Every structure is written in C-alpha cells, then in structure tokens.
Image (cartoon, rainbow, N blue to C red; front, side, top):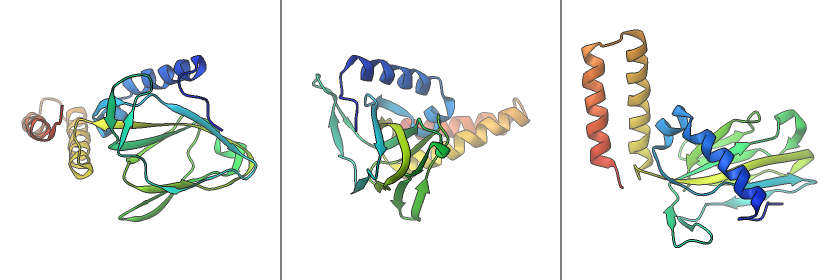
Length: 183
C-alpha cells in the first residue's frame, strides 16, 4: 500500500522528511545531495512484499518537467522493528547481501543501482518512506572517498582544532569535490 503521490498528506509528510534531511549533517556528508525526489510512503502487512529489482535510473518529479538521476536510494523506517515481523530490506552489492531492519526514524542510504527487495511481513505493519537522491558526485566510489575524508577531517578538527593537517585535508576535500561535482 502506498500513499498516492501529490496528495496533501503525501506532500506534507514529504516536506517533513526533506526538512529533517536538510538539517542532518551526516546525510549531507554521505549523499552530497543536489536534488531529492519527493519522498513516497508505503505500508506492508499480511504477507506483502516487494520483489527483487533495481530502481529506475531517471525519475520525473510528478507534475513538473524536472527529472533527477537516481544515484542513491534511501529507506526511512517509520515503524519500530518490534512492531512487525519480516519486512527486512535486502540489499545486494559487490560485498554480498545485507539485511536491514532499522529503528523508527533511522534511514539507510545505498547506491540506487543495487539489487534489493523487501521480505514478506508476517506480523504487524512495516511503514516506511523511500526516496531517491541525485548527488553532486555521480560515482559511488568517489562519494565514499569524500565521505571518509570528511569524517576524518571532522574528527581531526574536534580532537585537534586548527591543526595544519586539518587545513590541508580540508583543501584536498574541496579540490576533489570541485573535480568530481556535477552541477
């Protein structure tokens, strides 16, 4: 079951999610978002599932001429894990198969070209929001390097403020971002 796109409740809930993401530094560091597709909302129960698939490479924002390239997929869990059985998000990547069932309010961000599916819900209801992000940095490997570098810079600034190495690493980070950014 899915809330129909563009309905007042879908728009209002989507704005809440987008607002929270804009305030989340970890999301910004990991995704380097350029555009975010309006969040969608779904519910699985009574044996419902979603089969293995890869997300569309391009999505058109309903009611507009705007399209985004889907570099990243995200699932925001809105139900607590103890509220339902099954319903795990299964994501396949080059490192294997990952089973994800997070606490309410937690989100997984993963490359949109990953095969994934949702296991059947056998008790209760799994409620979630899902969305796609066009990153300023197209390549997952490049985003991953920038993410690790940014986290290291933040840690260095916290542990040793104004250390010359922090300034030098910040310079490297921004020069790599200039090289890889796709605006």
